[in-house]
Amino acid sequence: MKRVAILGGGPAGAFAAERLASAGLNVLLFDEKLAWEKPCGGGLTHKAYSQYPFLIQNPTPKRFVTETVLSAPKSGPVTLKLDDPVVIYSRFDLNRLLLERAEHAGAQIEKTRVSEISRQGSRWRLRTTSGNADADFCIVATGARNPLRNVATQLTASDTVSALGYYVPGDQANIDIQFLPHLEGYIWIFPRCGHLSVGIAGKGEPASALRKRLEHYMLERGMSYQHGSFYSHLLPSLDTASWKNNRVAGEGWMAVGDAAGLVDPITGEGLYYAIRSADLAARALLSEVSSLAEKVKQYRASLQRDFMSDLEFGSRLAKRFYLGKYLFGAVPARMVQFTRRSPRFRSVMQDLFSGRQSYQELKTRLLQNLKGSLYEIVMSFGFSRVVPRKAG
Ligand SMILES: Cc1cc2nc3c(=O)[nH]c(=O)nc-3n(C[C@H](O)[C@H](O)[C@H](O)COP(=O)(O)OP(=O)(O)OC[C@H]3O[C@@H](n4cnc5c(N)ncnc54)[C@H](O)[C@@H]3O)c2cc1C
Image 1 (tube, rainbow, N blue to C red):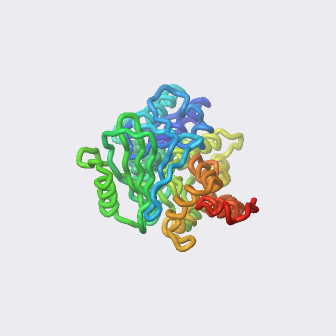
Image 2: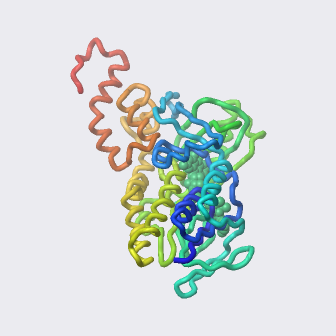
Image 3: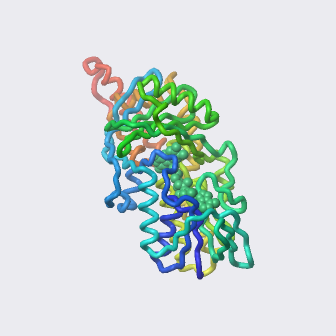
């Protein structure tokens, strides 16, 4: 293989470029903006930086947050201590860090927009705003708004979520997560270096309605959105049926990150999956198997094994998680109450935040813990003198 073209230089494209260039391939990365403040919370979980330690071992400014305050209607707030901090970057800084690493590894980086790619025999012809280029293989990393119709995931309206918010002046030590009535999503406040990122994401609700909900919330908390800088973007959130036919790779190409729809349908976490999928794509391309078709097959299989089946499972839980009822109350409210009153449940929540707890194993863990959690909840109401201590 003479040349790999990488279309898009966000976290997914930049990391794939670094991996492939480090292995000695001729890598050409195209991005129309290069490092930019992509609308994003910028939060990285323990799952991401424990597997890719360079994400914390670098001099780039970042925040380490060890507390999250969760709130839901009718439940009030609860503070959840995080044993594994969430690390928060500005996206300009994170993108620049990753692009610099790619360049240092030997990737050639060009600031230009790719407008079209077409097959010419077994090669690719790329049309960009600054001319044409050829490549033997394409990594598609153009994000959720991929303009190239012939490659990567085809997101329908029901496979996306509107995500929007404001960067506002301010500082706080903790992350805030606020659940809202009848919303398949949530509001967040992320403390960043020098400002706060306050945002909302919700499935099935138009951006204008989400914006109203967010502005109402900010006003209630005395936060002035008028002096903030507004941001909005699409977030992939694949419906369960869409995972089955998700177009993650094809003849001569692999899609990574948002362009492949690889975002957690419950939390909206996408940075880890962008980096992880880029790593898996690079490994497949560099693998021993000789034919490109085999490498593509290997990428599909490794994605499925590594995390895609868990994300698919998560998509089945999402509606129940945000809109379902448990013990006559809304699930988010119960979750906040259980977090407050049960140390076992709190530990499940900590593992969910750090990425240690998969969705596929969540139900079993919750069921195993149920008796103990309920016991802890009853005890927390001060029944210790009337209920004999038996449950394990
Ligand atoms: C509001 C919001 C908040 C979020 N918060 C978090 C969070 O806190 N934590 C988290 O883990 N995830 C979060 N996400 C998700 C996360 O932002 C994405 O999953 C992540 O950016 C995906 O990385 P990527 O490299 O696949 O795509 P992107 O970061 O979107 O990068 C795509 C790149 O491709 C370039 N590009 C696109 N088209 C072309 C073209 N035709 N030619 C050349 N270049 C092109 C763009 O300029 C861009 O740089 C959030 C998303 C949103 C919308």
